[in-house]
Image (tube, rainbow, N blue to C red; front, side, top):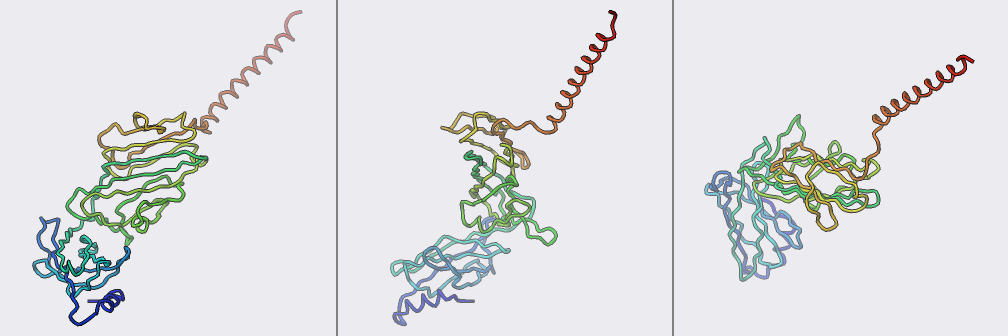
Length: 320
């Protein structure tokens, strides 16, 4: 049992008298993997705060019936309470609660799950890629709708005492300024071998992941290659901006979307490891091909020069 400074401040602010009304939050923790059966002997932490900043306030454990109680809570409509259960290293929060004199008691249900390390149950129901070509730079925005269709929380498998990886984003390695649409993901992803990776646990359900980054056209010669990280039901790529009059993609071209050129996957299911490839503009001639054709041209020129010399000699040595 512990109390934070925030708890002490709340108690001081609301200790109007020994008989000042207080609130209660009670509830139950259930196992979502096993048909919502009660979970006994589970740690439950109560966080509290204002303006979106929540700090641990106190904690307890569930009884054999999965029930828990937080008593003697200060009543303040501006304070947010957030109970959450800890199970196998994963924290499962409930809904947020507010208590005041007219609403002194709240009941919550917290759903926790068992964990699985492998194989990954994650799939992408949708993978959208938007590319805006501007000033020699590809500005890329991606949206992945990630689903865990199993009944367990995916936590990944630790190998060689390294941190487990639950998702690796195989964006082009020469990216610049990667940004996450949600601050939570930005804090939990790290760069390993030029790729963002995370050990975020993925409970059952759907999450939307948004990222954006930049790629220089000079370093790629207009080529964009994106390896899919997860099995995907549908992939869509939209391209707009400069130098898009000559463009090719290994996805099927769809109807235009305003100023954008749209490509979409024709298959109902793409596999993890499949590659989306887009070429913007006419690529420079590869050096291998240039050398090969250069050799052919040189040999042809040499043959012409040799034939001309032979004809000249025949002309000089022929009969008068």
